Amino acid sequence: MKKPGGAEKKKVRRSPGVASNGSNNTPPRKQGVKKDVFQLFAEKVRDHKGLVSRWAVLQETRVEYFRGKDFVAFVRNHSELKDILESDRDLEPEDIANTLLKKNLLVRCDRVVKTLRPGKKKLSSWPAHLEIYHDQVFSDNDAFFAWAFVKRRPLWQTLLSFFWPVVTLAICLFPVYPHWAKLLILYTCAGLLLLILCLLFIRALIFGAIWVVFGKRVWFFPNILAEEATLQDLFQFWPQKDEGERPKWTARLFYAIAAVVVILLLRHHAPDEAARARYQKRVSNIIDDVLEWSPRQALSGMMETVVNATDSNDNPIDDSKAGSEKVAFTDHLDEETFPKEESEDATGNSRR
Image (cartoon, rainbow, N blue to C red; front, side, top):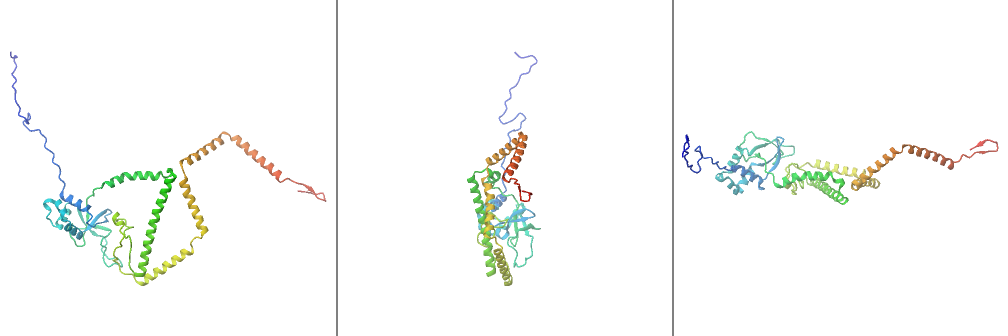
């Protein structure tokens, strides 16, 4: 029986994958963003130890830079790295460098000091201060190039950034360490400090002796005081080649005489054994106070102060009585110890 006024509903079959509006609502697959091959190449080259690089200051910013001729030699000697460029692997080192400059992965720099310093025959091979060059085109003739992207931080640096606050807190808690830990830290730090001072003294002594006798500038551990040196360059033992002009014999003789005079003055005004013993005792007392301090001593000292203050506040009258009794007892004791003896002499005059 049909409903009055009603209409029959027709069944409509819908094809799979087709929506009611006739359009496909299936979301498109997200395609992974492919990293630039030149960016990968630059990161690989920068992390490679075969390319010699240094640190310098570029417009108040420390940057890592290399020389153009070193880059060309590096790419030619390590052609396997060019496989990262895929279709551009056949490019020459100059073309690769120009592409890196266009992509702002490199920036060409120039030395700030372009004049020879007194006593120098040529400019420094690795200047410490740079400026941006006006023409950003690759060249291997006395050209420097600095990396313009942030280097990926290795895992050990990330762990070290979390470790430094712990070290700072441990340094602040040094007074509450046990005695054996304080001694261990004291002797370790004193030993390292003594090692550094001895190394600097022997280094300067060797330099002065060779400079006075032979007129050569020989610095062992040449980068030990360099701020821009890496950890690997910091412990480089072999000295660099002397690029300066040989000093005159008059200057060498003058400094030799000055050194002898300074040594004689220091020897003459050196403290004697008694003064040295006093200084050593004073320093030892200071060190012992730091090493032997403990929270228990601090708390005991605070408790004694509190007890004394409480007693003085609770019994002010007793203290005054005790003070007066002490004064009277002292006067009586003086009279007994030194009695006032009076005697009369033969003339009848009294005499104490």
